[in-house]
Length: 606
Image (cartoon, rainbow, N blue to C red):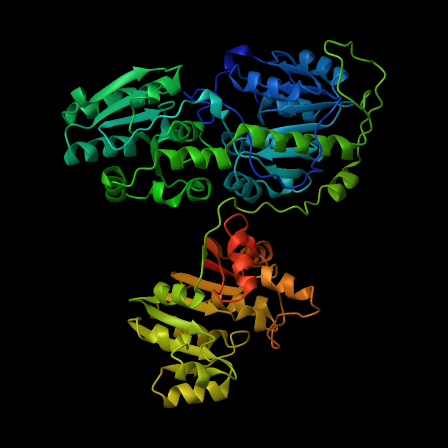
């Protein structure tokens, strides 16, 4: 099919091959689901839902089963624009499950119902799709992962700024995947297409590394080559390495759960993924995945399963830590079709409700009822669409770690490093904390290779200088040049519990950014949505330092840091363990909602 901003006469069936992304490549059931960012929480009921999937895959039956309980559903694999036109006359809402040619054509059609498109991964790398879609006429976009959503908005900000967005990860129907009580062993699987996007070079190095560890490891490659050059290269190099008898090319495997029964590991070496079902399906079966660190991998999957280097791959492969039930539970909690498809359901319902488009029925439809031709379709103006699409519902990472000692985490961050400590003087209570051995600058000094401290507090700096510390009076909001000099021989910067005290936070961050500092920066601050703060508010008490000027949440802190040019490497929460009942209550709620912890730690790069 030719990609164009103009509506073409025909959609070429020959081009309807599954794209080279592991959301569909070589896996069993393929579905969608995850965290919702903005819906009414209601379900789609009594609507005529058109599901447009240009690929003939197992998504279709999953979607149909989910939505036809309370709606009339048509799942269409269109071949011509005329088919799409007829669909717009029937449907109350259209869901294009890929942001490809079909979405381009649908977005350009007049007098059609609300349109929602799915964005999986490959589409955002295709300018023809991203510029061909008329985004001011798209009512909603569903992204398969937060990192794809972030990258898409980085690459196409003007296109996506007027479209409501939600992140919903891919998912699986767990009953379709038998659970195997496997453990460490010699069978290593690869599942998916074999092409440039799958990291063939790294896969070959992993094969060689496993052989060096133990010649009994055997690789089982389930997938089809999409590019002949990689087939020639891969088979040539395997022969050159003398490993032809250790690698079994299984071809395209339809029964992936059956294939996984004898597998001990599944390896993913891709440099780019959206929300890969091959990993999700392996974990559902209890098989341990070894995942190369593409952007987003650590957000979607446990960090302990992700590797950067061949040495780290060897460690993951040979460690005794193997938890099949844990892998299955992780899928149940994060990629479960039973819950995740409901999130798409709610998003579609909210889009339909907000669009002003009226359905004929307010209850479940009569199956196979005849469509009405008297629908009232209300299209929003471009300006109204932009106004309505401001997204006040911000998705939070589904996995957020937390620590019970912010100071100890900061000290460990500085261990063996050359450190610049911004805000080194504890105003008003420094001497008491020094006597109690609870003074952070002192604790960092005991583990750091070298330590430089800066603070605006002249009295505190004088006291620390007399005590033998290398400290300087610096106003980070105004003393940019001096700050730059002090970072010239530093490995890391820590700025704990400082930004909430500043008058001009933006100026301070700009000065840090202007230092051209290449190391990691730790920034911590109290959490605006702390459980303890909310509990005390009920007693007409606000728990806040009298010198604080700002409150931050995970979202507002992330937004602030990105606006000033910082890349966020990691975020986590912290709380202070105490003996009171409030802390006991907090510890009970933290596992399910870490965002109620008392503070936020961000590790960033300038």
